[in-house]
Length: 184
Ligand code: SF4
Image (cartoon, rainbow, N blue to C red; front, side):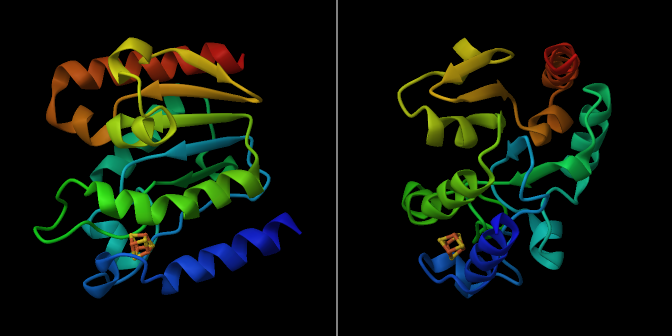
């Protein structure tokens, strides 16, 4: 039942034309993982590699995420991984998502969260954080577990920032090690 609902939504996302990003995309990236996942990871938006094959976190940031998940003792195949924006932001390629695009796309993510109903959402970076906590500052909550209604949120930086800045890489490593203790 859950699987069917999620599959249906993911098929609809692949055909979505709610914002202009459909015009230049090769593939929308609905996300992947089990429909009964206890953990969801929310990134920002597909990059070039993700757009090419229609899967999330398959480029350099994805490889780094895999390493971070190992630090946390988590198995990628047990997690549903997606983002608030399902198509590559362009032009220029990989630009920051526009508010209007996030607003158009957000109902898809909300549907996915409703169906999967995870226990914990790991929010990677400013965009993921702001869609759930529009009035709060990521820096105040980074590395912490936020409890909100029946959900828990763990907030940290986006792996692509860790690839650019050694200081953020260290913070990400520490945050994912902290996650390991939360699940212990
Ligand atoms: S980014 Fe989201 S809203 Fe825009 S076309 Fe893609 S799936 Fe639809």
